[in-house]
Length: 115
Length: 114
Image: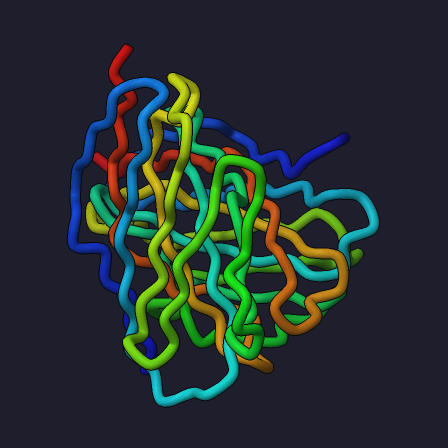
């Protein structure tokens, strides 16, 4: 595809449930990023992948959040035991090499609502 | 730590007029990158313009230009000949040299009035 895609577009779940959010980066991009955007705020960094490995996971808020990118392309953000405070838009971005100052291309996000 | 401040939560401009969105940031870094992203209702963040801090010349991209004042830690965005399609949230973002994550401001909601 031409751009970053994310599925699902919207996800409603109940408190305590497990959810998976998927990101398909631009083909050939080795760097992939996850951000979380709460209502009325700018996106906040969660994790950065270079290839298959998490190069920087300093933004993950706690151990309920985990992300994988097993083949260096598609990534899945996993949230266990969801809480109402996890409700937000989860944005994925990719860049060509992860090089310094490189432009990141964003997907449309997944809006997660935890009831 | 890096912080980015956008002090104008909402702005409006008449179609074809010029508008300036403000952004200030706080950092102890000397080399870094600054970006403006646009987020329309579709939620997809779109790059508007990018500036490298070590370049003194202000970046320009068609109707979009920046006023980068490094000493004042200011990075404003000027939109000339505003168009209805410019209506969106605008986010200012900072990335330190050698870093890979953005630090975003809280955004400015711009409405272009016909």
